[in-house]
Length: 113
Length: 114
Image (cartoon, rainbow over all chains, first blue to last red; front, side, top):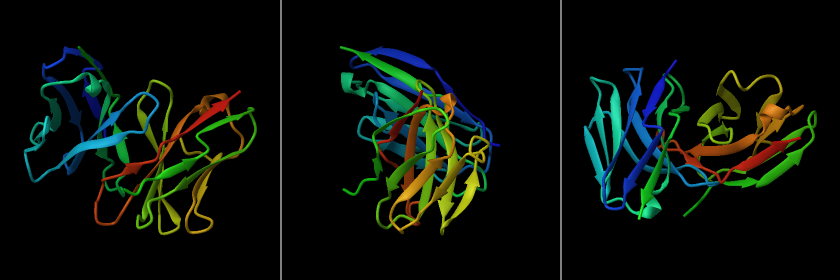
């Protein structure tokens, strides 16, 4: 089955700095790569996703890059703000499924003002 | 913007009791999922449901679990005889047929088994 590894498990940055979180996956047929943000006690919320036909996607301060050859994708947050503090999860659909997501273990991002 | 809703927000039960967790999907969505998140851990897939039947289930989803969509709107997860280790946050997620893999999560039900 699909194996998703996420690093680092915790990340602390100063406000204004950039943050990068990386995920690796095992199934080379995977074609959809979402990132979810989860604030304490809240639901996971999709913040950005990328499909395998592109290598990078940006949405304001957030970007995702995909390297299909190396089977990894990364979340980039620039000009971090205290409200970016949360747990971020990458996910990959289970192969030959109807979208069942396999999540990484999460990265707790702390942005210090 | 339409949202997935779940009830109750928090359920406390005694070990061995049955619980039913409810989800109301976004109205035009066709694929439904249950996920579980033990406190401080990652989100884990339990089961997917499409066209009124289970599509796939994980090894967590054993004979104590069942799902159904009894009235065409609510999507329920039943745990027949709860165990201490079932304590977790349970999230319902739904997806429409045109946004393959983009899943929308409900706010979750926190289940506490005593």
